Image (tube, rainbow, N blue to C red; front, side):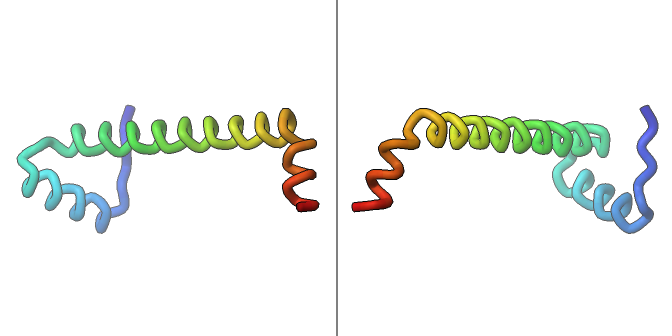
Length: 66
């Protein structure tokens, strides 16, 4: 895979890699891992909300009316 970054972003990545003594590749992998994890958490939260709304609709209605 080839990744073409805007020049400014590439310079920023160079600076971070140098400061942390890691490769740019390593930083890109970390970034992708963060995106994947965030999306996974968002999906889990959405699923949990859907579950509560469908399984506890009556309880939620009673709480709303209280």
